[in-house]
Image 1 (cartoon, rainbow, N blue to C red):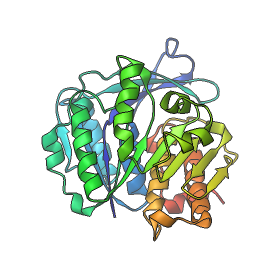
Image 2 (cartoon, rainbow, N blue to C red; image 1 turned 120 degrees about the vertical axis):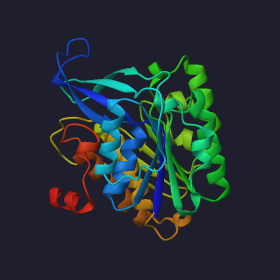
Image 3 (cartoon, rainbow, N blue to C red; image 1 turned 60 degrees about the vertical axis):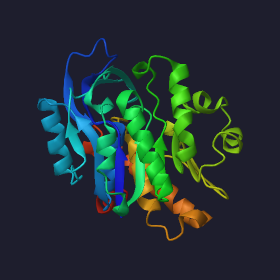
Image 4 (spheres, one colour; image 1 turned 135 degrees about the horizontal axis):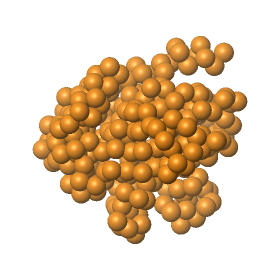
Length: 311
């Protein structure tokens, strides 16, 4: 079963010391990008995985394409245009992050409608996207893909993943996200994103209003665990005790591992409480383990490796 992720892939320059971004003296280059991370998780967990993106016509683009090939992510839908987006990431003493981006006008925002038309949707069971790249030319391309996927009954997964400094205004950002919400079947929203998205800090209220049409809501709360909802059930999960080094890519690990496991369920429209418990447990463990390593893609493991480490 194939998963197609669409959106950005970028270079994460991660601070080599725990300090604010203005005080970090050196950075380590890592492959990153929310949807690219999910594509790599899907591949690690045994799915045929495609990434639909555009990388820069530069050395950074060469580096990222090589990473995708190393991670067994199919690159047939990867084009090369413009320049590769960059993110500088600083980590504080608790492993939390702050960002500085070089993103506007980058290759990630030049995904074309022709790129969408080239996709063979007959083998795709799920599509994953996020909020960062639904702007400039890439916005209309994303929308075209969502419409095509919805017509074919393909499961659509969305990570809110707010990055305000990549948008000209919060009003336009929210308006754009809400244009896409009707197409979404699975949503990952963090506790610090809920109020912006729905106007409330109460997840129960959000479930009854803005998120009422969505099949699965993954409500992540960082060190306080996660709540996973479907139409009939809720599962609350605590984070296992691990030594946190770097939280970069942990949310993507949660979203990617949940989506990967969900596609193994016999009847997605009628997931039982027992099945939801298994999905939530696996995703919580998977995401938690990635925080014990530096980087995003470099921290992802196979199902067998996770089972070994969680013993």
